[in-house]
Length: 144
Image (cartoon, rainbow, N blue to C red; front, side):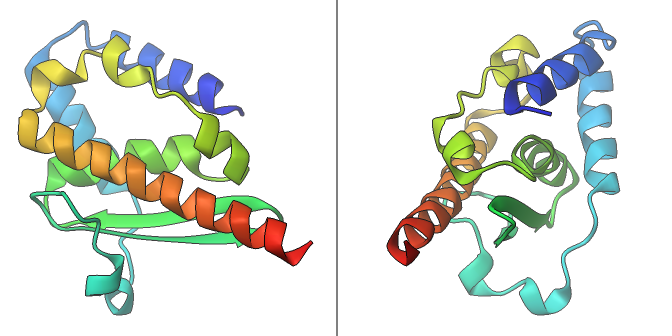
């Protein structure tokens, strides 16, 4: 699936909650519970996403020209938010990640249920994922 198709799928899932803030937050936390835990040895300072109030660890690898992310957080809501990003960007080409515009956040009304601090942290997670994609794209170009 493309990044847009995955975002549309997420928008559709959240539309079933009909804007209920409590249900939405619960659903985000539930999504976080489904995200596989990051191995303890990967929870290092080098893998911490800077700019998040909660601790968020993230790693990425390039396999068959596709980027695969692993992430974790020490808080349930933040883990749910990062799980959405992993779902959107996992298995995508670096170029597609770099050019992606994330519109799902506005469509599901995310700004209504996460505060400024979490919004800033979410932006930091997206930035980190795009930095990984840029590094892989550059690495690939240099190897040519």
